[in-house]
Length: 108
Image (cartoon, rainbow, N blue to C red; front, side):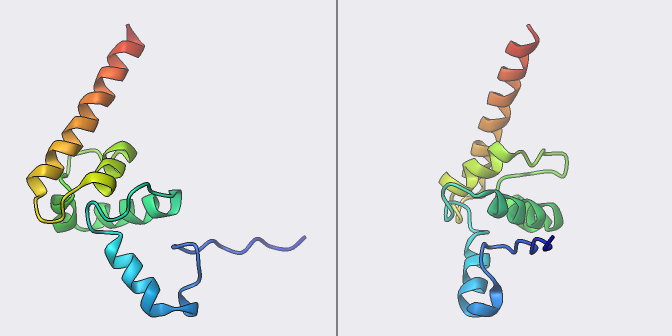
């Protein structure tokens, strides 16, 4: 049986076009640039947010206690503002409040 090749992010090999790959990787970290995220894009952003405090702040996650939820990351990727972290804080808080409301309804 042949071994499955490891999937790279983005979904193509960097060696094919390193300049385009690097541009895409950098732009993907800009709030509001990506739109709807694929699973590999989400995982890439999550890894960077977990590692870099300044990037987390830019994306609206104000403290290390803020949960990097898929919903919050998607909201900022789709509608975030790269120049206004306080706007992104509102997006993150909005997804957290929606999530808490769903949890309360589910437990009732």
